[in-house]
Length: 398
Image (cartoon, rainbow, N blue to C red):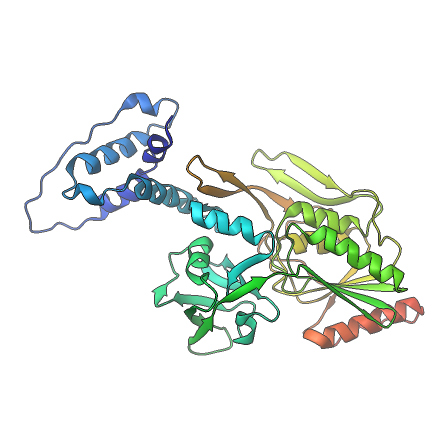
């Protein structure tokens, strides 16, 4: 079936709402019956008859034919269909936004440097990137983006919000931000920059390797392995793995990173739409299977970072320290459509190796702490040094 015809069959989700919500107007109102090509509806639910009727009505009767753009109408209809699912992680991407998203997975784009998501039907900042315009402006994990350039985000999905926030380096974007600790929303005016995501950053702290993963993108596993090899060559006796404010990313990268610490077992369990469970097993050949590890997490640790943290925690390989994680336990796949657009669709839920579904609740740290930034890293250093010297480990300050 031609792509425009297939898209046309989605129009009900946009047009049916408009038709049924129109008020009774004092004007010359006529009731027109739309025609449907039932041949095109074979194999589709009977509700789709109204979609074809709506398309036919608009095409034959709208007063200004020059404004009928079938591509925009079809994409709008698909967006309406996807939004009607009610899942904040199932989204429609225009050809342009899909291309931008694919570029982002390589670690380079232009914007403000903040990962956003949707929680409790609100666009929120999952985490600002270190050194980004978002961080420099004081934006924090959990901040709610109420408006973008004066436009309310109440009805936006995350991709629509992302498209408005992204833009050429040097341009500005105005956000209205809500914060639970503040009585009133406040405005933040940011200048966009070219953002390069260095997925992995590492340094030696005495005999300890401090490794931070900022996002799980295509280069992550390779960069992480290099950091581990370098740490071993420098005589590392323990590893601090910092996953704070890591919004997630590619599932396979999370499994690969988890496998660097484990000899065997399960990295993550996945349950699909039919309730069928499969497992992602630990891959052989891990580099860091013998050193003590502590994993740092917080409310900005989401998705793929929760997979890694959950794998190490459930397999008894490492303890978690910090705050409870974000709680995103679903798997999405991108499906490209014929016109270059795409749908990111939730295809499964994941569980930790012990079978825990963390959606909406997150992972609970073994050592809960409100210590921030360098303070928690300092505690982690003491934790590992005490383990190495077999000294009892005190809990971090709460």
